[in-house]
Length: 234
Length: 234
DNA sequence: GCAAGTAGACTTGTCAGACATCTGGCGACG
DNA sequence: CGTCGCCAGATGTCTGACAAGTCTACTTGC
Image 1 (tube, rainbow over the protein chains, first blue to last red):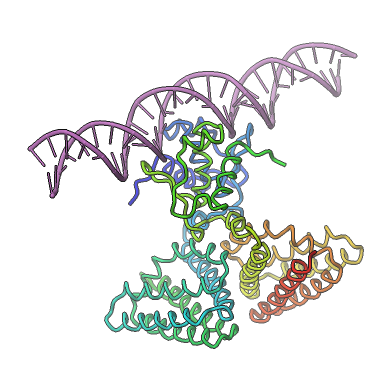
Image 2 (tube, rainbow over the protein chains, first blue to last red):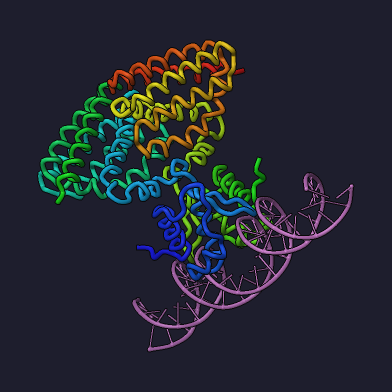
C-alpha cells in the first residue's frame, strides 16, 4: 500500500471536514496560511492539496477573495461524492444508487454492442461463460470473478463508445469489493451463469432490444442480491 | 472570460502535447526542471500543473522515478477525453458517442423518476412544456432553451440519484453549445415540444416503461437532428 | 453631508533556492 | 559471482519573499 504523501493527507482531511459539514457549499474554506498552521505543513503543501481538490471541482479558488466549496452536484469525482453520500445511515441508499447507475451504463452499452460486436468477441464471451461454469464447479471464487469482469469489460469495449468506458472505470473500482462478496455465494453464481449465457446468446443474435433486456435482467438480479445482502446483514 | 493563470496554461499545453502523441500512454513526461525551463516558469508552477493532471488521473507521479501518462480509459475527465477523441476527423464520431451516453443516462433517469416524481414536479414539467410552446410562438430561442434545460434538469433530480447528476453535469456543459444550435430550427422546436409533452404525460401515468420509451424517442430525435446537422453542414 | 478616491489588510499567484527522500544503476569489494 | 554502498536524477517539502487581485473603511475634496 502506497504511503500517502503529506499533500494527500492534507487533501483527505480537508475533504473530510467538508463532508462533515464544517464548510457547507458556497461558504469559504480557511485561508492557506491558516490551514498550513493547523496541519503543521508549509503553505506550498496546502496549495498543492487545494489544487487536487480544485481539479475535481470540489473547490473553486478565486484569487484575492478566497477558496469556496462547490455544491455537490458540481463535483467531478465519483469517489468523493460517494464518500459524501455514504455519511451516516445512507450507505445502503448509496449502494443501491450506484447499482442503478451501473444498470444504465451497462444496459445501454449492451444495446449498442449488439449491432457492433465482432464474431471473435462473441466467441470470447461464450469462453468467459464457460470459464465461469468451470470455476463454479471447482469452487474457485477468484477465477469466477475474473471471468465475470472480463465478460462485462468485453461488452463495454464492444459498444465502441469511449465515454462509457471512462465513466464506468471509477464505478467498477468502487463496486469491486461488493462484487467479490456476492460472487462467493454459490446460488448467486448459478444465477449469474444463466444470465451471462442469455446475454451472450442475445448478442449473438444481434438484436439490440433483446440484448438490452437480457442485460437488464442480470442487473435486476444483481440489485436483488445486493438488497438481500445489505438488508439482511446482521 | 477568466484569464487563465500560468498553472492553467502549463497544464493545457502539457495536455495538448500528450494528446498530440508526444508522450504516449505508459511513457514518461519530461522532468519538472526541464518543463519549467521550457515554459519559462518556476518549478512550483509546473508541479501545480502536474497536480491538476494527476487529480484527473491523466498522469501518475511516482516519487524518485518520474511522471507517467496513464492510458486513456483511466482518465477521469470527460472533457480531456473529449479533446483527445475529437482529434482529426473524429469530431462527428465523438459527438454521436456523447449523445449515446446522454441517452443512457437520461432514459435511465426518466425510468427511475416515473416511480418517484412528486405531483408538484409533474406540474412544473407541464409548465416547462407550456413555456416552450410560448417561446416557440414568439420565436424566443433563449427562453426555449432555458425551459428545455429546466425540463431535463427536473427529471434528473426527480430520479433521486445523486450519481447520475454528477456524471451528467460535465456532459451537459459540453453539449450545450450544440443544443443551442439545434434549438434554433423551428421544425426541430416543434418536434421537441411534442416529445416533451409525451414525456410529461408518461411520467404523470407513473409507468416506468412508458416513461423510458418516451424519453428514448426524444433522444432518438436529438440524435437524428445532430446527424443531419453535422453530416449536411458544408 | 456626500460621494469619489485611496490606503491598507487580506487573499491567492508566482518565484527562487535549498534540502530531504526515494529509485535505479553502476561499480567496488568481499 | 553476489552483495553492498555510493551517486545521479527524480519528486516531496520547506522557507521567505514579492506580485497582484479584492474588499473594507477611512480620508479627502466638493
